[in-house]
Image (tube, rainbow, N blue to C red; front, side, top):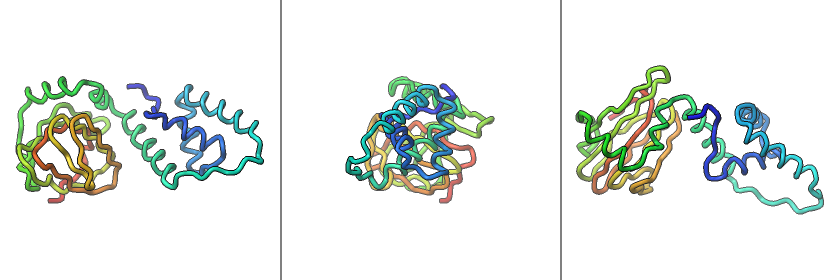
Length: 205
């Protein structure tokens, strides 16, 4: 994976526009400057939008900005920077079928806590960045262990269903959690999950 941060789903354009329009706080602008220095494509987008903003007629009425837009963009920045740190995130480029096949070759062990009678199997460990790629499965419904994230976690649903914060995710859905958060997800009918998380995460119950 490239060391340059990427912004999927055109979030780079939204962020560049906010920067060009001067709609960011000073500390937010500093974060964007870091991305500009690392990504030539993003830097070009910012330059083009800055030129366009400078040519705009200032008599145009201001357009309201979504209240959570900046929050969503900077959450995405944080996750992309985490992904740039570890090559484990390249595994997310594999197909659902290929990731599922890999899970069938591993040794599984019980995952303590919760009510889902879950199991886990380790695929790869990146000790340099304190990251772990692993699988979690549950054959029937229930809660997974309550746990705290030391840094960002990514979960890809390979089979079944996975419920986080009252949102039900199904096959192909990706769920990103930021660091310093705690949650206890669940499954309704059972699931198979591919996960990338920190070696320093903590199981609370």
